[in-house]
Image (cartoon, rainbow, N blue to C red):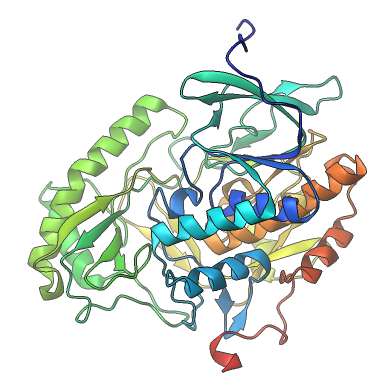
Length: 447
């Protein structure tokens, strides 16, 4: 492919850290890097932060607590506190899953980015392969905004996208699961007209299965009758809304190669067609939903699984389940190992006996001197990733990646040369939780 023509506009080489993707991992990574003293640019395809939480209506924010103790702190918990203070979240449930209001989530995240001094490029995304320097580092990325191209240079890059806009090139990443075996896509939506006084809209405690079994039985009949193809859950709760009379629903399901535009389009179209059918099934199945209607459908289809970074270390299922501490531990995962089965309505769900450990080495590229990844791109086997992939843990890995990127930029070091134990200490000084102990109590325990 020939060189691009950059005659439209060209961003100045002013960023030390470039974060690609402004979802739960990305907006926290950008804040952490900026608070670490770096000049930061955040590149986000939508016109607001939050990614799948806001554009995808995925909620609640899971999972901040385990067995009565906090397992995620730092910037993620600061964000939750500010979200709750703005009337946009319920932050005191023992389980540590945080229902929220999507619009408030986007506003609070944007305010925190602005306060940190992050330059945000909204409605902009990376296109094509990153340019490489002779040493194999990423020199620059090409950006597209409304069809116009620009070029952005940075000292350190963090990939926080759903599909790996950076790690998908130059051998920096690989697909997590074999083709056809990756977890399916979903498209969330919000129902209005719900009698939320009669429906269990919050799940409070560990060990509870939050899928509605009455609605599940009704959807199984709909699949048998050929009305819908398959489904997940279903979850009809306060997730990405906490307004009386409304619930957010995660129920649609489709299999597609998320790097194939035609497959994603077909899957999305099918799920959009099935949403009104699911609402009809719900109306007939539960008195609390007899007057429900589709109030809003997510702007973005959710990808549970795509690429992962080829990192210094890949978290195995065995070490994750052991919960054994490592010197470069930067976050804890407490969500069940929740894996949706491609091509069916099945789900495997295994509750953890202790939080799993996420090391910084799983966020550091093996081959690229200035590339980190966070969120859905963390290097982990599919079983371990089934717990790591949820929002609170994405946020925690984002804070770690942003902190590491700022340090690498400040010291002019390759990311592989960072003192990972020192990064862990720095994160702890900023309120992050890297070990499971009695110092970290839940909201309820502190009353």
